[in-house]
Length: 128
Image (tube, rainbow, N blue to C red; front, side, top):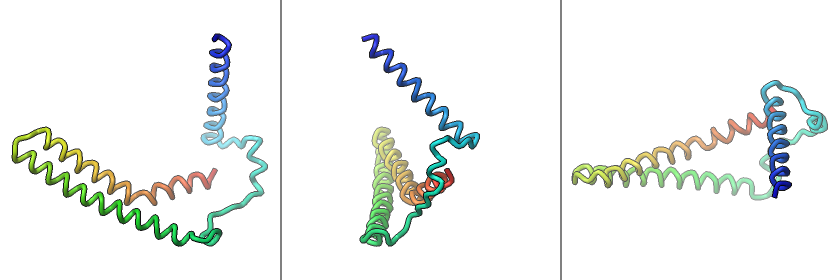
């Protein structure tokens, strides 16, 4: 049992040391030894590499449209439940309606901003 605990602690320390090295690379800009081999590789995303890419883009666009429609429907239902709870003096129903409205707002923000978020992190990754 003690050997297993020691192995686990050793593995955790090695992982922590590796994470510190990665953090130092990102913050200070120190290039690790293994990154020198990747300098000759230049791969960029393209839209004609595989068949069906344009259909995939259309499918993702349709899913985004459905997400926005669902957010609007959720907002309407949440607002209706909120109003019913408010007019019937039922705080539990009113709270559920507020939660529905808030969830719909967050869903709309995520559906509208998903491309911005993905492009942001893609550009950060491209700079590494």
